[in-house]
Image 1: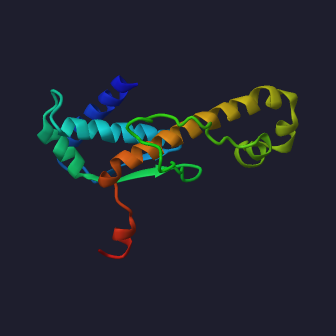
Image 2: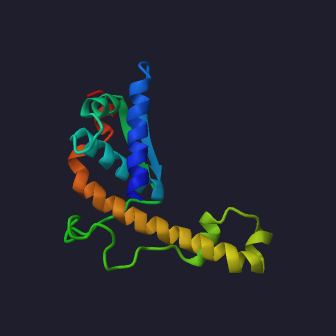
Length: 164
């Protein structure tokens, strides 16, 4: 929720300003966590704009040490060119791709064969995994739309690889 993201952003600013020897830091998000990272980054940028009681100079000091924003997921999410991030900020009308039960068992259900074959796993474990993957798919879609909105704020690591 927005209050938790705002609280986390203020905590990042406070930590960065309380430690004069703060090392460079990164925001890292995996799957649905990528959405949280983007929301935190948005909130830090909002604070930098001076739209709150937080001193923008303190935010600037914190962001000066931000070395990277790393987002990872199952696969890149492609958003159709016709979709507008401003008018479609969460989900497109098409349902997100969720792996089949066979793929879930083969790739995501890290358990031994006996567990995977059990009735308990089929009745409890598999539906929970399916639900988690559906939530991840929705978050991945929102990340793709957010990245389209924020493209000027993100750059490829390629420029660092070639020494530029």
